[in-house]
Image (tube, rainbow, N blue to C red):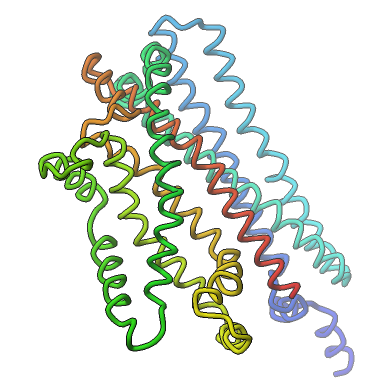
Amino acid sequence: MTTGSQSAEARPSSLGEKRSFGAGAAPKDAGGWAATAVLCFLFVVISTWLTFKQAYLHAVSLGVGEVASGSVLVLAVACAALLAWPAFTSMTRARRAREAVSAGDLMTARIETSKALDYAHYTMGFAALFAVALALVQFLMANDMAVSRTFLSLPLIGTSFPLVLKAFWINIYIFVVAEICVLVWGLIVAVARLIPGKTAYPIRAIATLYTDVFRGMPAIITIYLIGFGLPLSGLPILKDLSVETYAIIALTLTFGAYVAEVYRAGIESIHWSQVAAARSLGLTYMQTMRYVIVPQAVRRIIPPLLNDFIGLQKDTALVNVIGSIDAFNQAKILSSNYFNLSPVTVVAFIFVVITIPQARLVDRILEREQRRTRAG
């Protein structure tokens, strides 16, 4: 009995093995993930070869140099083959983990299992990235390269880029001025909505009605109504403004409602004791807002404010409905002349180039704020 029990204890069962590894994966699981990683690697290499071979044949038929096309084919397959190292390393680590378990070295088994999973996940993650890229290449080659010629005609992109970039300065002018106006107007609306006391109820009601109406109304309708309505109304001064000024007014009204709510959320996130302390020192409500509450609130709302401004920059393309020759309108004219959408692709590229760095900046600010909060 003693010998049998000792041998039973010496043999690591799969249940005991999982218990010894706690909530983590056992070596058997790591082996499964490693095998999946190898299959992903093989899928990527074969798919890359087939896709870029098709692209190579298209390039040759279009008269593109065979050497250049062949080099792209070889480079693509070589990039896919780079996944061989993490895939097979994962297999090796999983095998070492099983050997360590058999030898009773659970510490080494735990380390090797963790490494095997890391390499397997690395391989599968990049395999997913390759799959998305290959799907995009297949889409561009669809219908005998018709998609590529429609959206990515390189000669037309080169011709239209200077004209579209020159018109894009209209968009820059509109969103820079509108952003300044939105910052000021949104703060005014937010403070008006938070004025305490029964006597301020009408002001709060007006501010609430404004935010509800302009948050519910699409920006393009606001631009259309102001861009065509004010000139038709014949009002002094307002009827003679430029198209860009109408666009700035419309965007300020629309995004002012959103930014006012962001300001309000930031102000209400400040603890009420801050207001009580400021008022007990003799500060008025407006002085409390100016010197105590708003400076603290602004630090907290910078990321959502930047997100709203990214949306504002994109919505400047809507001003084409009132006749402003911005980048999008210029691209539409060129597309109509050449019966090709490549100029519109140029506009999309320019907007993406200016908005992605701002999106990453928002992420950095959020991460820094989270670190500061955790440290505090």
